[in-house]
Length: 179
Image (cartoon, rainbow, N blue to C red; front, side, top):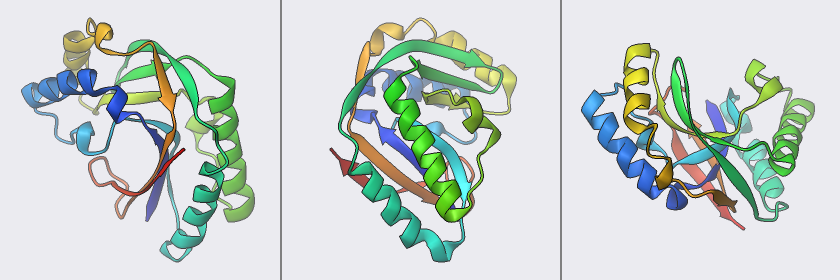
């Protein structure tokens, strides 16, 4: 079983999400990214023993309840070979949350750091695919739509998701904690 933790920003990114969904439909992405709310991931999804689900999620919920809402600035739309995302400006508070989650999961549950955790880029994914040509087309269609994205986003809706498979399009929301 796979767990995923993030911050729900769907209600603040509706305009760019609608544009992204049109592009997604036009380019016929195999695994549409819009099966979950738009979100800022706090850690790449990680594999757990299903027996540990309740215990781990309880600790995550307790941690979420200790976080006061805060804002993060949006850097803009960025493209990499397999992903198009809305990148956030580096922020000390979100880095601290990311690091504390990693420490909690490693120390208490022996969940190792993923290589991406070493230099995590906070973002909300618009498109993701191994089809590099399709990703480039999606970027070309959305890159000039930054005016649809707010300059700052309030981070106050924390999510826990799960998947039996761990593949895109197979995740479900388990719990949302609103602060």
